[in-house]
Structure formats: C-alpha cells, structure tokens
Image (cartoon, rainbow, N blue to C red; front, side, top):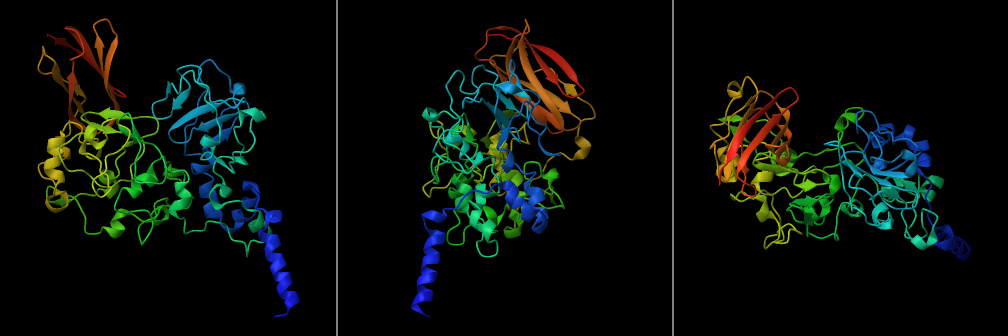
Length: 476
C-alpha cells in the first residue's frame, strides 16, 4: 500500500469519525421512507406499539391512538381545554398526564392524571411547580439532551428533544450516517437488542439489583432491576437479556393490534422449562408460567386489593415466588422503599400477589400448602365448573353484629367487574373493599371495622348487571 493511499484512508477515517462528522438525528419519516418497504411487518407493528406514544403532541384536540389499542383520553383535566396543553404524556396503556406550553406538568388541581383502567382523575404532585425536563422526557422522547429549553425559555434549562415519543432513533441511535450509506453504516442496535439499551429507561435508581418500591407495590419501570435480582441475571455469561424473550417492535400491552399474527413474546418460559407443569385434580391444567411467576406486583397507575389478594397493573420480572405463608408486607423493607433481597441478592414475590389475585377468597396459608411442591404434587380438591353459582348473590355478613371484623360473601356466575363498598347509614363511603374484575365462583371478603364507631352500616355489591345492598351492625 502506498503512503499516499494510507494518508487518504487515514484522513477519510478522521473526517468520518471526527467532530466535523457528528451523527445527527434524521427523524422517523426518513427511517420509514426505506423500511416501510424493506421491513413492512416490523414498521407496521412498531407504529402501533407503545413506544411512539410515550409523549404525544397536542394540537387543540386529543391525541389519536392506533386501532385496537388505547381507548384514549376522553377530555383534558376537568376545567381545562385542549388548547391549554402542548403534550400528553402517555395515554397508551396506563395513565395520561398533561404538559403546558410553559414547560410545566399540570398539577394545579387534584384531578390532573387520567387512569385508563378505572377512568378516574387523580392527583399528581398537587400544587407543585413540576417541570417537564430532561429527567422526564429522556425516556419519553427521541434525541433528548440537557442543552437548551424546549419551551423557548433558556433560563428554565429544561433540555430539548428531537421527536416526541420513542421513535426509531430512540433505540437505534442517530441515523444520519446510516441514512447516507445504509449498507455500510448499520444502526447502533440491531436485532440482538442488549439489556443496556432497554436499561436506559426500564430501570430506576441505577442499573442495579435494588428494586425501588412505593405504597406496597414495586415502582412501575423496574424491569432491569428485577432481572438483576433474579436468577435470569443481566445478560452476561449466557444469562438472559430483554431480547431473549421480547421483540420490542411488537405491541405487547395491546396484543390485538399486532399485524400478521406477530407476537411481542417470541420465547416463552415453557421453551426452557419444559419439565414444569401444574396438575389440577390429576389433570394437566393449561396455565402459563407467567400467570403465577409474573404477577402484577408493580404499579404504574392503579393498584387494587382483590379479595384477600393484591394486584398492580404491571407484571413483575422477579419470577421467583416466596412460598412461605406471609403477606406482601414482608416483601418490602421496613420503610417500604425497596424490595427485600436475600443473601444472594435475589428477590421474590409473595403469595397474595402470585396466587390470591385469582383465588381471592383463600389465604396465604392455603396457598402455601400447595405452592411449596406445586410442580410435583399439583392441586387437588378445587371446584370444577359444575360448582359455579347459577346466579349473582350477596349474602348476609357473618357474624352480625360483629366486633371488629366480619366476612361478606358473594357469588358470581361469571367473571364480572365488581365493586364492593361499605357506607355509613347516612350514605357516606367508609371503605371500598373491591373495585376490580373478579372470577366466577364464591368469594369471602373480610371487613375490619376497627377504625369505625358502633352503628349500622350498609354494604353494596355492584356488577355490570346486578346490584344488591344489605345492612350490618358494628357493636363495640
């Protein structure tokens, strides 16, 4: 090789990698101009997945979400107009918050966050000056940077971003070089998506095995922390990465939106754990591993008590189940800020998350008696379909009068959306025991009136097509 050719190649390398050839964002439309024909299934699925809808621009009307996905946000916060906002945070899957043109998240009333599951408006940092800055939109937008201020007020130091939502370059990196020379300059992340890219958003408090918690649930984007606190590990030395199971381009929250029967979960637990199964009364029960090992122990917007069990609205990636007869209080540190880890740095979910979310009338003692050896011994003595009630029924509580606790029993002939509430004799709500979808069968719910005064109370059961009330007496 001549010295002149060597000098030319070296100069070209320095030019392409030096500060004069910094990679820049080209925008989703540039990516799709090629990939809509090159990889149409990937593009069409990505466009209906949740990533592009992490941040949605508002132009005097509510954001539009793809068919078969989010029901959307019906109205802006009570007392406001769409013209008062620049962006909606989310609205696809769990909740929606609202960002004003001045760069602040709307916090002025106690009805500022819309929860999709319940249709309720709730508070969020009520009355605070909550800036929507790079600490937030680094996981809601593409090309986030700490430089400048997206609202045009430099002294706010909010940072800026290239596009709202997690677009192509949000995971694949700036695409100017790839756009100019597609066959040579490959995207920063290919099909072998590593845990590092996902961890830039799907973790909190650092990429560690410490799992932040709050209010009796795991916080809502802790999947990397959870993986590191499980035997599946962090992708090193043959351990799993996110891409071992997930295809991040395919809708998962609303799987019905996927095109050409593609699925977000490409490898299921049974692929590796083919020797594990559940026997019910001597017969194999068609149950997915994740039904028990990935219970919704995390909370993004809604967390509910369901009979004697609990559920959040995001599945955990801890996988391990604590088979001891203990409740979820034992799952967290004394101050409730973290999930407890054992001497090996591993976590586990309790049975009231894993089992009682479905077996709502049972106890952790009952669940523990089966859970310890469930893959060996299975379950016996469970009711079959012939024992499902024929009609809705709300029974009289027992004991009655009571002090301080009593049991309320009701029956459902089919899976139903159920609300079970307790009111004072004057109609004041004193307790909401259930507000959730419940399976068919008989359910026994304990009500503790320790904090109430003696007197007559009314409990009410409401489903889609059944309503009933009964009176009970608390006598101290």
